[in-house]
Image (tube, rainbow, N blue to C red; front, top):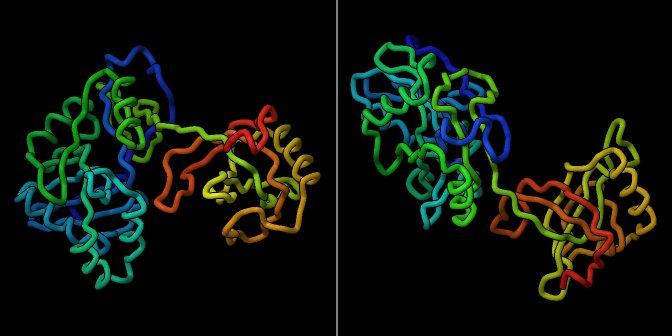
Length: 319
């Protein structure tokens, strides 16, 4: 292991379509909803899995050790994403969370490896047989990766297409996937850099929600909302959807602060009441639009962001 260099993963920059210069010069991959991982295989049949920060997490995912055997005697450093697949073969981040954070519980990690196995989506090769490939273009690295024939129940190389970014994004949206990552065909691998040569585009869903509370901000936001607690009418009650803490301008935050103050109440409007430290409740009469990626199995919004106050709507309009 000591002979293989530590290589920090290259990061994608958030963006949107259309792509700069048109999408003909870009490869498009599905954005995986998991944990980034760099695999070091020294060529002796073993493999070490490192997190984005460089921490050794091999004990967390022991089922990936076999990748060293699949690579044989060829030393390699691979980049990919650890995911946990649901019954339909789609990445399920909630399922993966049961596996994360078990570095000091290797026995439990080993047991979960049989009941909740993970899968490594390999999308880049950084070093092979002593040859540093980070300075080579994406197209060449991809050809080298494909030549390794890495396919099995615990790892695979997901497909990539050239161009057709809008079509690919729509396909991931229809399939309930997180989005796409677009990579310039000519891009070299930039370790540790959030590069414009890789652009990630998330599928964003929108929903009108009812504001039922807020959490005060800290520091320069003292007295102002740091997050809004939102919900939807379901089964005859206001059901909690989560906390929204991004998306406002300073002016919008000040406007919301005034409206929340007027609507203050001591009674939680959500049923059941969520356990939110420092929560302040309001009468459920404000409506807003939020964007989010997906919902959790419990129905909460993942990665929500505030879009706008819907003063044209009343809560009853959402029934």
